[in-house]
Structures are given as structure tokens and as C-alpha cells.
Image (cartoon, rainbow, N blue to C red):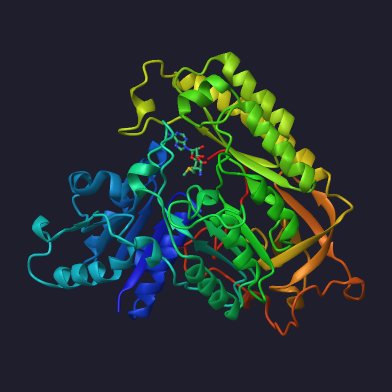
Amino acid sequence: MAKIYIKTYGCQMNERDSEQVARMLVERGHLITPHENEADVVLLNTCSVRDLAEQKALGKMGMLGALSRQRPVVYGFLGCMAQSRGESLFKEIPHLDLVVGTQKFHRVAEYVENALARKAGPRMDDVRFSIVDVEEEPDSQGSIRDHLLSERQVTAFVSIMQGCNMRCTFCIVPFTRGHERSRPIDQIVDEVKRLVDRGIREVTLLGQIVNLYGRHEFPKVDGRSPFVQLLEAVHAVDGLDRIRFTSPHPIGFRKDLVEAFHSLPKLVEHVHFPLQSGSDRILRAMHRTYTAEKYLKLVDEIRAITPEMAMTTDIIVGFPGETDEDFQSTKALVDRVGFDNAFVFKYSKRKDTPAAGMLDQVPDRIKEERNQELLALVNDWARRRNAGFIGREVEVLCEGPSKTNPARLMGRTRGNKIVVFEGASRHLCQLLNIRITHASGYTLYGEPVPVDAGTALGRPDNVSDIASCQVGSLGDVGKTGPYRREPTEIGNK
Ligand code: SAM
């Protein structure tokens, strides 16, 4: 039995992949440790979306090399950077043993055990014994299906597809995750049923362009896209209270999906709706295939059906050729929508992507200035949106103790806002009504509405100990999903 430390960089899909790896390792008798210092195996599940994410993972792996001065340690890079850099990673990190790409997570446990066996043998530093597997694997989308839930966990991620065919000119994802492939609806529904049987009440359906789910594999039925058919099938699972999804693309966000928010009550009122830029010229250069006007029209259509909809987004500043006028268009659009939150990214050149070769790259200083200016606007809107909740009652799914103050509890509204409140053990893992008393830019604070006024929205509760509800015993394995970390800041990634 080995002690295995897993750290995840990047998006929810990476977190979900790490959870699958952790589950397979635990099934084979290994232990997941949150403490890097005691690890026999270090696995970093990497992100390639921006250079910074790659540098962080490389720096961490370099630093953790010191562990092997005390005992043999197996080191592995998994996921997107492993896929894009492959064998070349051994040159940068001489103590590296494993490089496993995005379609091979299901083989990690086997590779780890091989590497452990070799470390115990006589030729442990021979580079010929290193393992690299970054090949394509047919049907790998079906291999991410098992969950490692902590006690009294109430939310879970479900990967419904892999890959991306969109070819945005800034984005490395089509190179790291391959082409779009979707799992069948019945397989996903079975996974959700199993989760609900184990106490999960909210699922987040994950895909790179989640609303394009199934477009190559399954037909439309009565004008409803495969994604909407999937939402309906998941919605029918008894015992499930909430459905989220991330991230959709404005292309393919059609009437049937807009209307699903009305017809499917479990589908919560939150859309993460990547904008990238408010300038048509830049959107064209990004190959985003919509205009600012089209984006706004969609926002208006969504809000007409669901006025309460919380909207968050991704925006890139400093894309090649972005002028001050383009940037002002982005700011104007952000102001017009009034997002609840936004991730603002400084454009980062990615290997082999068309934008990396564009001649009019924007200097770092300007990227930084635009980043700060846009963040100020995003933060201002976040505060205004949150302030609007003061005095209102909101439905909160209690996820467990607050990370910043474990004596308090935290949960999320349907709009995905964090709520921290003074609670009791009977509130754990329950749907509650919370009256919001005050708000910061990022967090709402409130108190449970007394039971006789309808506090117990959830199932009967027999919890006796606050600490027993989801304490994230798996360290960094999944940092915002099953082992979700409360964000302390917004906007800047
Ligand atoms: N589904 C999303 C979409 O509609 O484009 C893609 C998710 S991507 C993994 C997350 C975000 O990273 C993107 O929305 C984009 O804002 C940002 N991003 C991707 N490539 C980038 C780059 N080269 N530089 C800066 N930000 C980037």
C-alpha cells in the first residue's frame, strides 16, 4: 500500500479526472494523503490553458523532488500538460517517472504500481523505465464514471463528454483533449442514480462545450438537442434536487435550452456563459462565431424566461491586436450584462495555436492594466449583485463547515453564490431557507429561517457532528468539486 498525494491544477474537468484516479488507487488498496511530505507517490494533474498553470506545476514538481532524498518516491504528471508536452517533460524534470495523458487516466493505477515496483528494484533511475502514455484511446469518455465521495458529500461532478472541436484561435484544449466525444444518456443517468443513492443531491454536468453534448452521436428529438434530452433524463432521477452544467458556448445555446430552465425546476438559475471579448473584431479573430449583439440577445432571451438567472463569464484581455477601443467594447458589454462574477484572463500564447503566431501581440504591461481595470468593474458588479440579496430568503444546499471558520456552515444558492451562516448540526447536507443579513463582494452571510417557517426543505436529518459532513479528507484531489474550496476572491485566475 502506498501513500499517494494528488494535486490538481485547472478546471472542474481536471478535478473530476483526479477524483477518478484517486478512486481507482483507493480500490487497489492505496491511501490518498493530503500531506505531500509523507507521500510515496506524487501525482500532479496539470492544466495547459495558460502558461502560468504549466509553470506552477513544473515548479511544484521540481520542489517535490527533494522528497526522494529521504525515500524512493514515484513522480507523475497527468492530464493536459502531460498530453501536450509528452516525453519532453523528462528533460525538464529528471526525477519524473510517469507522463500520462488525458485519455489514459484509467491506466494511472497500473502505471503507478509498475513504477513503485521498479523503484524498489536495482535500476530505479534508468530513464528507459519511465512510462509515457499519451496515445488516443477509443471510448475514453466512458472511463470517467466512478466517484470517491467523502462522508455526507452532497454535490458531485459528472463528466458527460470529452474533447472540443471549436478551434478558438487562442485555445490549446483541442490539442490536449482531442475531438468531441459524448457518453450515452443511459450511462450518465445510471451514474447520477448511483450518486443519489450515496447521498448526492446536486450534480454538475461537465463538458468543454457542454451544450454541444452528443451532437455527433445522437439525433435531435422533437426539436430538442441531445443536451436538452440529457437534462430531461437526469431531471427525472428521483432524489436529485439540483442540476448545474458548465461550460456552454453561446453557439448552440438555443431556444430548447433556454426553455429548459423554465420546464425543469431542478435546473438551477445559473449560467456560466463565456464571452471572451465584447469586440466583434476580436471575437472574429478568436474564431468565436458570434457577435457582441448576438451574445446580448441570448442574455436577454435567457433573462426573459428566467429573470433570476445568475450569469458568470470568462473574458480574455490582451488578445493579439486588441486595441483600447476593443477593450472599451468589452467593458461596455460587461457593464450592460452586469455579471455576477467573471474570470478575467490575460491572453497567454499557447503552442501551435493560431493566435500564438499573430504578429500584433499586446505588451504585458497593457494586458496587466486592462486586467486590473476589468477586474475592478467585475468586482463592482459582484458587490452590487450580492447586495441585492440582503433581506431576502434564499434556498441553500448546505455543504459543510465553512473553510474560513469551521464553527460556521456554508452552502450555495441555486445561483451558485456562497452563503456562510451560523448553523447547527441538523442543517448539514440539507436544503435550507437562509435569510441574508449581509454581503461582501464574494460571499453572502445569513441565518436559517426557523423550522416552523420551512427550514427543513431537505430530507430527515440525523446528523450529530458538524465535522462529519464533508471535510475534504482527500487533500487537493478535487478543489472545488466534491472537495470544494470556498473561493476567497473572484475574477482573477
Ligand atoms: N468552454 C469554454 C469556452 O466556451 O470557450 C472553454 C473553457 S477554457 C478551458 C476556460 C477559459 O480559459 C476560456 O473560456 C478562456 O477564457 C480561457 N483561456 C483559454 N485559452 C486561453 C489563453 N490562451 N489565454 C488566456 N486565457 C485562455
